[in-house]
Length: 74
Image (cartoon, rainbow, N blue to C red):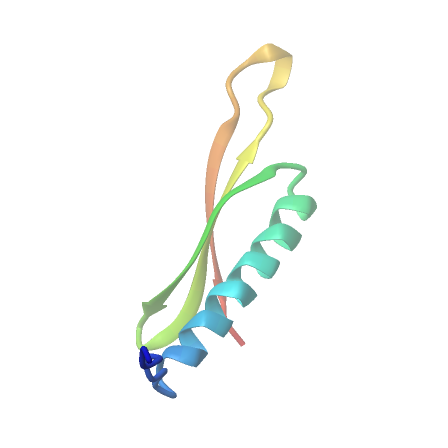
C-alpha cells in the first residue's frame, strides 16, 4: 500500500498567501481597468507582500501597458 506524503505545517501558509495574492490581484486589476497577468508572493524588508502585474489596455489601439503593483499582505 503506498504511503501518502506528509504535509508540513510550514507549507500551508504559503499556499494560503498565494491564493490571497491572486484574490488581491483580481481586485487590483479590476480597480485599474486591466487584466491580471501575474500575482505572486514575495518579501520586501522582511514583510510579506503580493507582487501584482496588471495589463492595462492601451489608448487608441496601442499595446497594453504592463503595470507592477506591490501590495502588503495583511
